Length: 519
Image 1 (tube, rainbow, N blue to C red):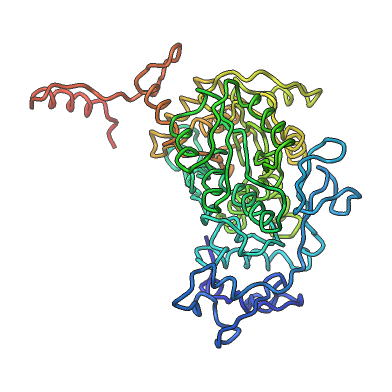
Image 2 (cartoon, one colour):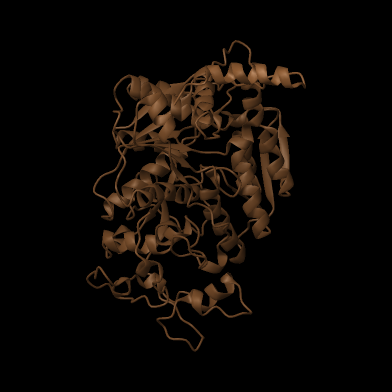
């Protein structure tokens, strides 16, 4: 990512409260008042906070000393698809999940306040925070704090410096299997708990931490999960010292996913139902008990997840890719990516947004069926078992959000059968990646769109990888052992059993080398 050394050395303690014309070579000429800081040290106001940290303080102590003293930015809940000036709105400090009509809520920012600063300013500000340990801006989420939770005190934030995940150039995979030269995989699963869910959970748990300090009636945080949400929730709650309660569908998630909330001290309920059944129960429970709902029905999480879209733009030096392909289950993530890209366009950081593709498993494909019907009446489905277990959801909460996002970016929905997604995962792994089955779903969508000519060989394309492959080792073992019923496992690579003597080993090695393509 391109950024000058002068940007990375810029002080966050010298922000001018009054907007002025942007000066290309001086970030300090044009900064928002939300970042005005005060200091009790004897150092100059132009000194970088990281250079005046005292030996007896940590980065959070330092942030307290440089605490913001004013804030021109704000955000609030409004009914989904309503503007900031909606007649129905709620403070983010209220515990509310639905509008008065029962519809979804959305976090809307005061865009007029944000627009007082031009796109060049925001690009430079965000870039200046990359790679730092200044609290909380070292996080890929909180480096965009003004666009996420602008009014939260830095001291209330619970962060593992999540985000800033690898944008991997899939050179060999793109060339060998797709005839593409500009294919990238955004490895959101290379994160604190091994999935993109960390991006949203740092925001939600930080706000809960604030609510508890404000003496709101919150005794804990609960979620229904197919694995990754529970891992992220339990980790961030453990860091904050907040009880977490997890509803998991029995025998439907990997052992690696199950052990994470257990290890983090969550109260785990294994329930004899599927995710949709767990979701129904957690909504009923949180309506009766002072347990804060952490599922993506809660729009706070989407504020963190949208920062992955902004990161992609940063990593391309603010050039917009042609396509972004996202696996979809409960469908909050596809809207979050749209929201991140759209904010960047509206605030002048870029002049367009990419086309989005939502990829679903064929065994849990309500959005795909809705898309193929030309967006006629949506019908939930009974989700069948899929290796892409995190998206095994038949009645997605964020269906309206997903449809809105896709309709406003000329988006596409594709699906992947179990064999297609497992083959795609094996092909990707064979070129040096180690991806999850959900990424296999997204790669299958890419295969189909390349074959049909919708995506061209030179189109800059980003596939979003949502979880770490190490969470799904059993499915990989079954594939490479050819132990999956009615699946050919065409790209299996099982170990070769050989006797412990020189001749036998030489025989199998010669056979292997004779089959290996010559350079």
